[in-house]
Length: 135
Image (tube, rainbow, N blue to C red; front, side, top):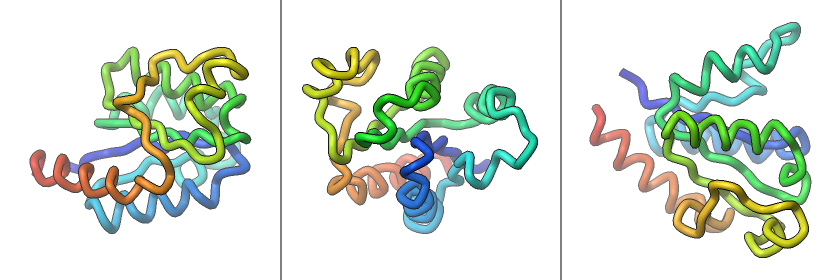
């Protein structure tokens, strides 16, 4: 059984999301679910998210100056929280303090489930351990 990781990101960050997906697949041995690969033209994105997110073991969300104000990113984080999925937010170009003060708050994100982009390799290594534990 494959271990699935939902990759949440804003449209402007899709190149980084592709790199995340590559590392999740090749370095951790998990199956990434990313809209740019898994939502086809003509699909209703809301239907696909409701279909795909419950199949994931965890969600990794890229939070950048571009994505921090995107409703879909926060909807996906909230849905993962409701589904009791592991959530890891990767910050790039924005801090938790800025999200709290300038963007309306961080909802269910705490310092324990947030890493900086420079720490993404550490996340992937930990993910690989979780994948091995399930296999």
